[in-house]
Image 1 (cartoon, rainbow, N blue to C red):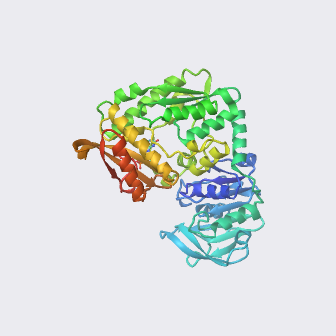
Image 2 (image 1 turned 30 degrees about the vertical axis):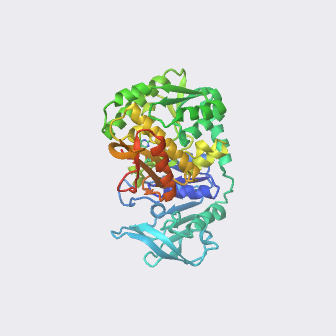
Image 3 (image 1 turned 135 degrees about the vertical axis):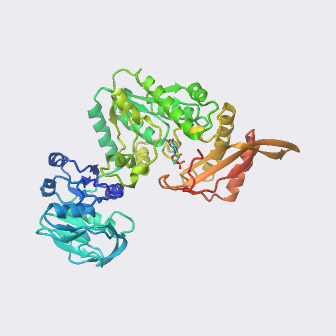
Length: 509
Ligand code: XMP
């Protein structure tokens, strides 16, 4: 196991990911972790992450320096290295000039970190301060033109430092360096697999929960579904899932979920029919933010009152993913702090005094999909594209009525069929239909029509923070438009959205 201490770098999640890619388990902890806690965790190695601070700032993050003296190998990256040097008696010089971008790195003396590496390689720098004097026992292991002390090591104590970032793609040999640290220095074993993660997590949940009860808000998306299956494996019928039908779901969505999770996997799910409540509250509402607020508030109320019916519930499970946890745990939050706020059940636990269980908190989306596969969830669930909490309410632009929802649902269903049949569903981040509040003139069977316009949106993205419109083949777009106009009553024109994010967003509202 590798312990990563989070000094607030935007690349922390990448470090963890690289370690797991090497099939080694890792855990991220804040700098406040104590020596005793580190001893209990007994990691094979410690990585001190980078961070935006300068060690000269009074509130810059620090760890108990005794952690560096436990005899556990340590790799300090950027700020992590500067902190280590400072804490062990070396000197770091403050500089107003930041070195940012590519640099040519030269290995100066053999070090296990650089085993089997070329003598010269490029690396990616992002720092202001530089080291000017090393603590006793350390030597320079490599330099760049601008940074004489770019890599250091203390052979006997197995302490290493890199001024650049080995975890980013722009340091092509970085993964090799991390591998060398894990396997040549820390002697880690490659035994972390999704299967071992699943087994271990199930065991932990069992121990933590005992025979008490857990509640989970099920959205039908991959994160909450995988969380449900994992907890169900651990505690069976003591898990109760709550699924709120807000009347803003896609065609047959609730039924499909019922079939897979309730009938096939025998998970205990309460389906709460609240369609009326939501649609009544949304009547005549056109403003997107008001729509979101209304939906969020009603969801909370419905969920809470349903949860209160479950006697002796002591835990609330959530499918929080790694990027979310970084945001909340990162002591000195980097750019990850700009994540948008979604409506979810995050506000409930304080009020209801439930303890949180978040078994996916160290995973990325693609790893959650892999976990779903390991748990033998059907592909249909694992590969679902993300769907916003406010559902179709933010895809019926303008006022929401049952008939407009019906038009959108039918059109969206046709679109999905075609996207899937063409093999595009998994390749797209999202693909969906949006019903516009304008009408246009058309001609059908010699008759004039005056009907709705439907927009088709399909985007590629890695994380939804940026996105590009998908270059779908014209033939496919043509088939989609033809079928929608022919099969969906109330639509006589289809347009394709060719905007990217930024400056547009993925959803229209
Ligand atoms: P935007 O429209 O901001 O969307 O580019 C980025 C991603 O977030 C989804 N989204 C939401 N998800 N609750 C959610 O759970 C919401 O209120 C919400 N709004 C947008 C959107 O579908 C896209 O994947």
